[in-house]
Length: 300
Image (cartoon, rainbow, N blue to C red; front, top):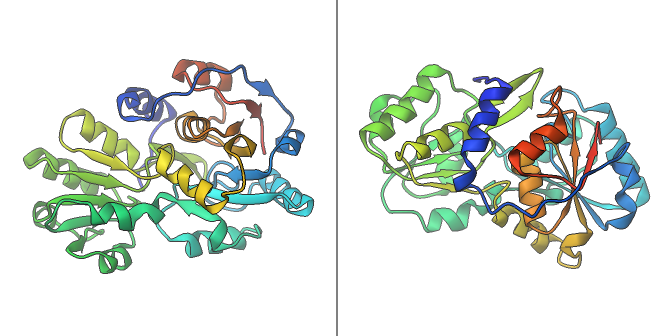
């Protein structure tokens, strides 16, 4: 798994604005002690996973405590995540192993949009870039796994790329995709639009990073499926049709995914400082990005 610095990830996020959804109007954030200070006004609490509930390892204690407290209060909960290596069952299993009591029906991600999007893709063989390619390739006609052992010839032989995750990547794997698109530009579907993610004390490079940079070079036309793009939030609305958008509260750690996506979908947002923005001047970074949350808290 490749890592990046915060400054490099931030640079890519700022440069990606032409490919991101429209920015919501500014608000003046209110600093709060934690999530429980503001939940009384909401009927559904929507959690991000990485950076809020965990950092790739054990549960974040504050996240686990807040999640359990909301369960005891009877609040309706769901997790909207760009963790798309596994389906809802696999994501729920991972969260349950960390102590979170969550069902697959409470997991929503861009991966759920794949059937409709793949049905509309251009004809011809597509390559699936992921550490678990076989299960996805088996679901869609003319899809070929492009895992750790794929060669330049394998990348050259497909007419488009379904980019799920790059967990297995090193510099050589990244070069395979870049070189293939430089040789012949082709479309790409990206299930995880994150540029970077806090992971076990470092910042991992996520699919959004190369996707935005390759699109900037004119080498690919990208379709993004997860946060901050609207379709994944529409899935939340379909799952909870009786809850008005302004009665939904998103808890996230990234201005360019959680704040942009949730506020653009009509939700309120608590931005926590224990994930992607750890060690940063949160409000200064949010103002620089032009993406302000409704609330800021050190932890959930």
